[in-house]
Length: 311
Image (cartoon, rainbow, N blue to C red; front, side, top):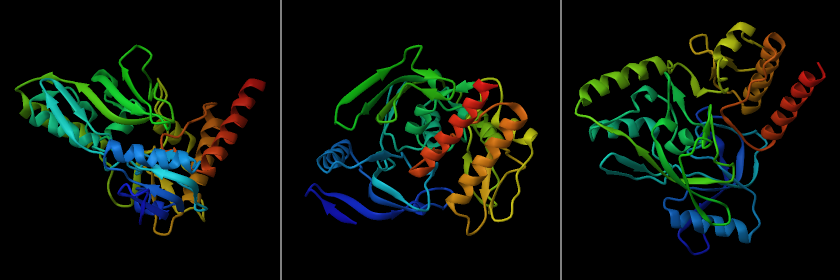
């Protein structure tokens, strides 16, 4: 780590993605920054602008897949930008706060409404960006506003409108960095019942920690679960790929010791192709693909979409 720009920001060179990815796989990021405050984030963005660096923002970085060949440019993680404030029924949180922990803190302060989402991994910013949903409820149901910053340092506030969220998606663009989220919750003294209800949904979400896993890897469709499509297509088991989809949670990948990100990406592609062949549906990753993986997936997806049009 070294100090940059005299601003007290530590910047890592050749940072291993294995340090943060739940898959414990991936190559090196050319440069990596982990700001703790909004001012530090602005300093990092200013540095990137002056040096004309390509930026990738990865949130906590746990739900990512980076090629073994590495990533050029600057990777920014917001996992250290934390803090929770509660005023009445309004809860605001920094982007690095873990979503499941926020649900517990809300209940501790007699605020309910998020229990059905218990057990969803990742940060509050990640949950907002993909409109995290489970058990008939979405985080958008409690969304009040979110502040974000673009690479040019400009601040934006997005409040709730009908088009702010979609199924497993939101209007936040890829270059917006969420820096603050506000949720409007319901006051309640029935916190014991709320905690039990939340723990019930955590158990339904539970994935046995027998091997390394980063949660669900494909988006569900509006009326079909990706897990059902994967199960119907049949699991892929190939020699040379030290990863497999779980029999227990069919949309989750477990990895074995020594597994590389390239092997995981190959499994994603082969599974998506098999699902398309059996159902005509092209799955899209819910994990964040970085570097060359993003372009390679785009080419794969476009190829099958063209096939659908020609058919």
